[in-house]
Length: 111
Picture 1 (cartoon, rainbow, N blue to C red):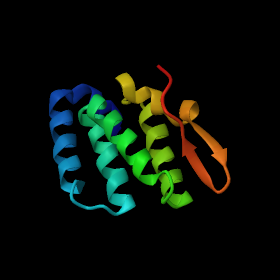
Picture 2: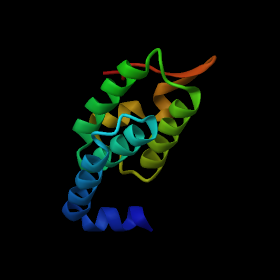
Picture 3: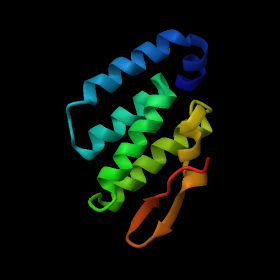
């Protein structure tokens, strides 16, 4: 229901998503960063894609597997709901995640 109303609300949904993303910007905890990316991808897919690239670099050697799985779940949810757009679609889990012990590694998107 949320995703149907998101598509219907358009600009208002993007504004609320941007505000939600901003609420998590200063919190560096993995769960907060996942929330920030989730809302940023809804608000501004290009900025969200850049945020994913930055998060991937930061987490490349330090993230716990459960954090990567949580991020993958968020990306899958957005992809399944067709809210993932533009360059951000290249990061969708079905396309970009592969299993590597003990992490889920995030590849660079294919151009």
